[in-house]
Image (tube, rainbow, N blue to C red; front, side, top):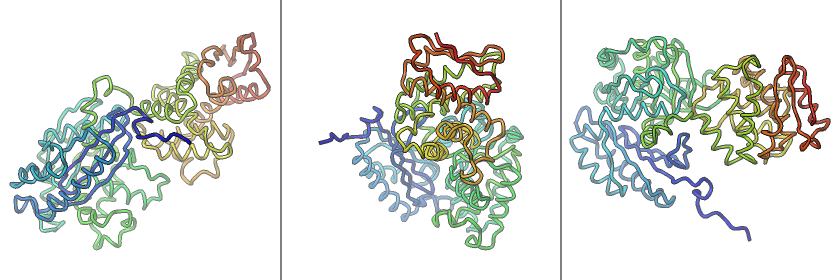
Length: 507
């Protein structure tokens, strides 16, 4: 009889961690595989409770919202117990910290959840939102906005540093409450609050990182309307002028149900959608950023980030993910690492052209190059492409994501493979240069595979080098039997793409 694994920790060796976020609109549980640089969710569930629906007008959390939230927390407690999660972190945001009965709710909530709940200050909420962006993007540079049901956090981020932050009372539920659900009455309120931020002009020409469920709903609608080929939210980018026009279209609609794409938005989220569109529209007008980049990383991921050491925080999120994935799916993670070094020889000074940004993508492609080896040989390319195109990658934009997907597709299908059968739009997401590099990296991996067959300890002994216009593979006498027609054919294909003469030297 086959021995079955008893728990998920046996697979990764990580200690699961749960984060429960009690917001003004939703209460959410996310159980992560571990507090690592590229976290993978094991479980994700939210309940739209509307805790903050009446806080602005009554100063109190509504009884219906309290009942719904406590029910969700009891369920989340049971789920964490069933999953064996020992580390449960719970936070509460604007509605709870502002409500007169917030402390009483926390007492009941801690009893339902079985753990302590931290009520965040506005400053702490902004810091965690900034950390979430740092977790999800490689060297982020711009202004982040995290829109919840009760507040909007606006943060200036430069790399791993938060320069400025401010909390504004502009959540969707709060605006509905204050204006009596009158969108026209909210325009002046939103403009007045945005005008209080003295450093918004610093956002001009930079990226705007949009966080929050309402804004992600806008992005889903935009994807649906434009026929976007991917359904990956993280890193989805829209030019500012286009997003302003889209927000104006949403908030000017007489009936939300008449809008194309509204079906992708949950019914419980639709009431706040026009107010979220208004907040984004007015903020973008004031900021004048270059683009809007949507993020699925927010305060929950920011909380994980805050638990990490400075060395962990400095790790590249893309390469961390690729290394972890190679460890789980490849024949040998050490071979994948050796591939990065072996291909480095092609891009030495005076060799093939490569920017620092392209180098990290090449290394990621090498690490991911063997994750499809268990699939049927006829479908490895297509399956690997779909896995990477839709993976929970961080630290890449969508064009870089598709570059990685195409690199692994060509690695299995061959660098000259026809891409006409790929989903519409995939090919147009990458530039001609990136497409050529994807084929080049694939050809290099295919040649290396003829030597090492996915196993470690071989490639370091069989170097490749550039000698003028020649690409030279030197096979030591101890490995002479690895020489053969198929190896030479694949090495010649690499030389052809690199526009170099390929030479195989044995002994």
